[in-house]
Image (tube, rainbow, N blue to C red; front, top):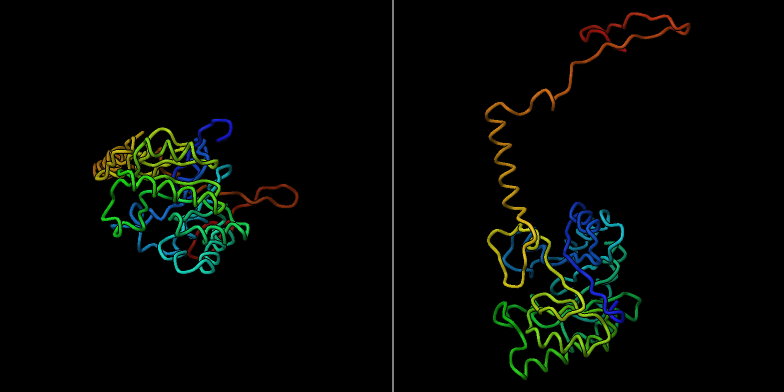
Length: 282
């Protein structure tokens, strides 16, 4: 698709219902992101998320997906200890989570790990620029690559990820001109988030683009719906109708039990059997 100049899409997913919705809408790649720690678990960061938790959500997403490529996001400390440890965990995402590939953060420092995973036949998506698992080392969620030196570092990281064998790379939180430069420099597709319009693809958190995060509105997110507001309105109407006796009506209720006549072998109708204390049965 990059060679043909065709852009594609990636969106995060965490369960079968959202996976089905996104897959039916035509999303090309579903990322089971460690962002689940924040949008699903209500944590302040992605750091506490475990391998078992992401694999659990991968399995759920796989059940709701027919066409999209599923990427399992390797969480903090699941790949940083050693390439061997990273390979073992990456294999679990495919074997237990039904993912098609894995994503991990880091540039030149992670190249040996990426190379080891790819050599084992596991496709890898890289991630450079603003890397949330290194948020404390970066001094917070800040745009990366603003200075000339920092821009060169991010570019070198992207090239190292490509050389190590990654088939795509996420560019997060970098200036749009730097993202364009990286996209034009690499043969593998770039997937932008907060990186401007020049990437080969774009990724957003599904909760953000659907308007399910009322108190979080990042600059790079366009909200295509307001599911949270609509959901509150819907549930409020439900509460009002239950309290006012308007729901359920007969339309949403079942009728009384119907007596069913037994037939004899010759087709003659016989009266229903009686069981002591329970009335007619059969």
